[in-house]
Structures are given as C-alpha cells and as structure tokens.
Length: 277
Image (tube, rainbow, N blue to C red; front, side, top):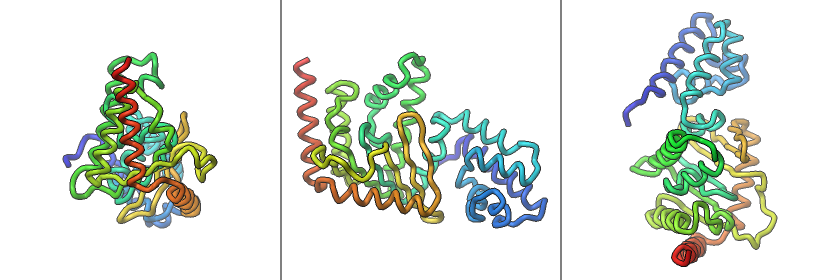
C-alpha cells in the first residue's frame, strides 16, 4: 500500500524525535520512563508505527525542552485526520493489528458498515453538517474496511447485541442490505460473528462499545467508546480486564450458525418491512 502524506508526516515526527532524543543523550528506555510509556513505545513512535497521544507529546516536549514542537505537530496531524481526535490512532492501529475483537451494543461496527448505513449514522449525529463533511466521514469509515481484505487481514471477531441487528438504522432497506453485507463477511470467513441475545439481560460489558486489538510486535490494546468520546487503553492490567469481559460476552452469545440464522432472518424481516412502505 502506498504511503500517504499522513504516513510520511508521522515518519518525519519519528525521525525528529529520535534526533532530539539522541542529541540529549537519552536512550529510548530513559525517555520512556520520563514520559510514562515504555522504551518500546518510544521506538514505535520513532518508526512511525505508533502515534503518540497529545499528552505524551506534551511530556516529550517538556523532557527534551523542544519548545512545544511535538505538541504542535501532533495537533496539526490530528486536525488533518478525517476521524475524531480520540479515534485517529485507533484507525491506524486497525491497519496493523493481527486480531481485532469487537462488541457492538447499539451500532454496527465501522469495519462492517455499508456506505448507506454509515451515512445514516453520520447524518443522525451531525444533522446540520454540510454534504462535504458527511461524505468525508462516510468515505473515511468505509475506507477502513480495506483491512479485512487480502492475505494479511486480521482475525476479526464480532459480537453484535441483538438490538444492533433489529434496529433499522437508515430505514429497513438500508438495514437489510447491511445485514446482507455482514452475512457475506461471515460466509467468506473474513469475520466470525456471533449475536448476544436480548434474553441474556445483564451482561459483562454494559458501558458502550469495546474493541480489542493484538499485534505482532507490540502489546495488545483496548478501545472503549461511548456516544461522545473514546479511550485507547494500554495499561496491561486494564487490557486484561477488557479481554476477560469480552470472553464473558462470547460465552453468552448464540453459536456462529445460530447467529447467522438470526441475522439472515432479521434481514428478511427488514426487507419485508421495506417492501410494504
């Protein structure tokens, strides 16, 4: 995949970080200790693999006494991202993950959304936005799905709450097409999809959506999102808690076969509803 301007800019950030770090005689581990991340993370920043969050960039500026250059660079790159400021690094991590596990309690995950579904969600949350803004958001969201294509795609595990399957986002026709798309992903073994039935009642994770990501060369992360913000979690103890919550969700779901049957049945119900309106 060709590198874009954003990739090149983050690589320049990493090169500059390495240059400034070495100029004051600090190892990656020493700098990491002072800005409260591991030395391995500093190495990933310098390679352009990981993108530091704003607070980390601010601490790097303080330690290296750079006059705010790293904070300004991060702010500039975040502002140019088509994603919300709290999500831009998550989108980058998706592209290098070897396994992604998601729980979607209300909305189909972005990696599985059709353009029409993504448009309906975007318009609902930004009712006064320009058409240009809406198209940019939809294109960015559907473009992320390229990670599910090709031989290096990650293992993709998805738990959908039954409410997510039954709610006709965008209308019944759009919802039917979205569920058809999810079925294709599952049938082609690009995703392993299970449904958490409403009859389960209380379940292991009731505070929003959850995404777990694993990698070849870096520690796993968790990403928790509510309606207004998201948090990327790196702390090993917290990530372990999130993994346990996801395991508890999975054991409460229908089997993959029963889940697909439910999804296909819901798609037909939405389609019938569309044909009568």
